Image (cartoon, rainbow, N blue to C red; front, side, top):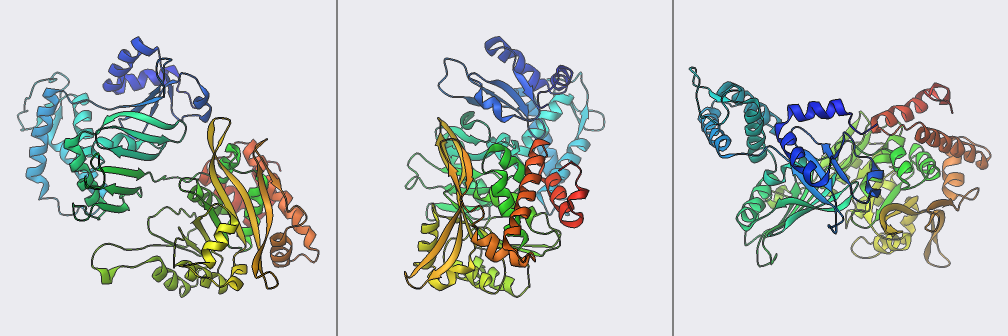
Length: 543
């Protein structure tokens, strides 16, 4: 049950005065909102939603739509600074700055947050009768109410450590992308409600500051001379900034692709219909037995999400080596060497994906995961596969034909005869179906290899999405090149057709996990690894 009970709602309203005040005002206009701890996907189907959910800390989100509104709106409910609290905030900041030089052990963002909280406790004294008055105690502490302290702490954190006006979005786990354009309200891609307009407006005075502040946070300064910056925030979120008005006509603009702390599980993707349990079982066998897979599609089609969801299918005792420009790969294995490229600082100190992949070949990993293959480093990816290392990577392409064309063409220029080192190409897209935007695996293709007679790469369709009834069809059932020719011998089957019994078992296990609502990523990891280590009889549900 994700809806919050009335007693819990009453407690929230008591604990967070800014929420209580907002709800009292909104009830007069829209009626009583429904409170959620987790937002169910079916809320999207409501014609006129009126819901509130909590994020990290003191920020709450209200999403609503009335019959007079064209689209849903997103309102961030945060502690508001009135004039008196603003005065106390300035006093607190002055005292913090006076003492800040004494703190020499701050190395991370978390250290800074902890230090601010410590100073705040030393500098303030809770006095519920002190509301609105700027009074100091005998010990020189500033008297504040508990509500004022909450407000002061939120605003200091958001301005010094957090995302400034964007802080509510950084705390919201349901946000995928944040779109900031000068002179407009911020728009978001929400995991449940898709594109929504927010109550946060970016005026020109803040716009010039935000692009430079965020550029400093990602270690890639912007200026009129260097107007574009790409990088990663401390939480892993990917940022693209276009600063100069010559380039971005309305003024500075920015896109933040949020980093998801906990990956989405394979069973959750099956439950959402991204692919079915059959595709999941097929990927399970491929990864267990060291096949190389390219997950392909357009931008924001869910490639990284699908990749992260299937990594638990790699046996738990394997060594993983990942190489990325921005840290998006999430691997549950204990032996995981996670490496990042470096493109800041002096040019001679830059480290690209190709450099790290070459280094990886010397560290004897069992599986290599380049976060995304874009260009010339694709040659090193194929080199890795040729030396027997299974590779899982994402790639921008809309079909298996395009994958082959791009890898055998400029600038990657892989010889056609090398393409049989790749085993599986999965194509995933964001598609419109019955007026809804959904993510679906459109096809899974098997690469058989180079055919000299036609001077081309032979591939075979393993799965295909049927858009009419939204199902995935196992085209290669009892006719799979990868299952029969590549995996069955490694699994020790004299009769290659026996591999389909293994496939059916894994498919059934995934279907039962979905039936039992086992969707938490780490619970799914433990479930799959229990099967690896102890077999089907040790699973906690009947199969």
